[in-house]
Image (tube, rainbow, N blue to C red; front, side):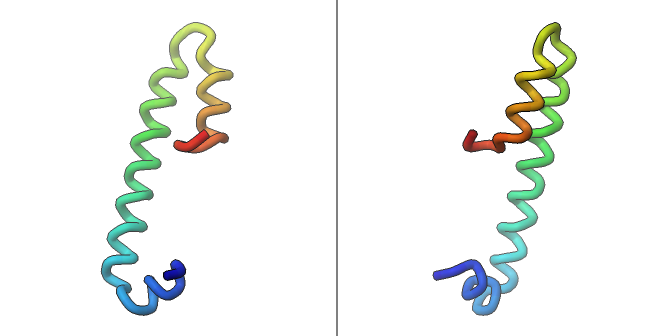
Length: 55
């Protein structure tokens, strides 16, 4: 099933998943930004944000 099919057939489920993914990504970036305050961590954090959660 493609994302388009999921969105078409199950719009409520699709929207729920999208919102949960957005929230998880926000939380990941917030945690990384807190870590960025550690000495020498800024570059690592910047790359982790670029690479995403599976990088």
